[in-house]
Amino acid sequence: MPPGGLDMIQDNLALARAYEEQERYQEALAEYGKAVKENPQDAEPLLCRGALLGELGQYEAAITDFSAALAIDPYNGSAYNNRGDLQASLGRHEAAIADFSQALSLNDADVDSYYNRGLSLAELGKLQDALADLDKALALDPFHGGAYNNRGLIQVRIGDYHRAVADFSKAIEVRTGFACSYDHRGLVYEKLGDSARAIADYTAALAIAPHNADALYHRGSAYAATGESEKAVADFQLLVQVNDARHPLAILAKQQLQAKSTGDKA
Image 1 (cartoon, rainbow, N blue to C red):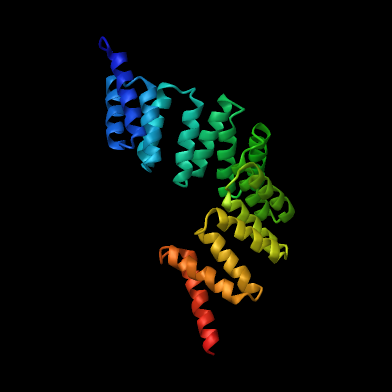
Image 2 (spheres, helix red, strand yellow):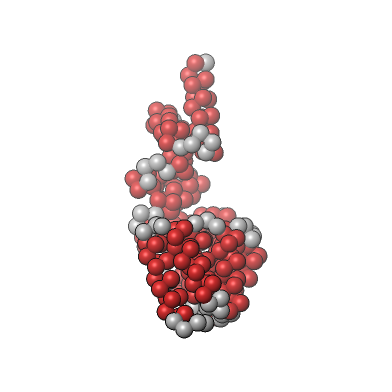
């Protein structure tokens, strides 16, 4: 490294972070690139650039940076976790699990890696292993709303609806504004035959996110099933209005409206 090189790298990193805060992402990437070029054996600029690339949806480039950083510093657990998260985003769950496991071999109290590995295991249908990882994540962080929510989803897949309700309820308790957990719990209440509680949960979800497509469709369907056709139509109409016409639930809602119109004319 040339004299003053370390100071120059830190200056590049500081400037890159300032650009990130201002959402000037291309300029931030350029500064990270300068820092990488200045000292290719320093993992920090690669980690920083990889994180930004991941946020920008450039997953392959981000994975390349994290891999390069790990070649320099193979004991960086967060880099394994971050690379695993990117692999999972690309649907490469076996590779993701390998990275999360490597992170956990370096730090067996890494909540994020247990949580992320659990999600990938669930995607592969390894539900009991996924539950075990989410249990470990919650033992380490009993206020992890995402872990409760996703454990609830796995309980639904297993068919244990009462435990699913308990998990969604806990997710709602520890994480305010969690619309999806209200929606998920509402679906389980419907499976348990409790339409009133289901509609109440969909309504709670919509109080948080008024245009939530899932909650609108589910409440509309619940209203239709209980004979409240006018309320059902209102939900389906709003769903169609506020979502792209290609949205799967918007398409289903439009079909429901067309069926209702045809039935009224018959």
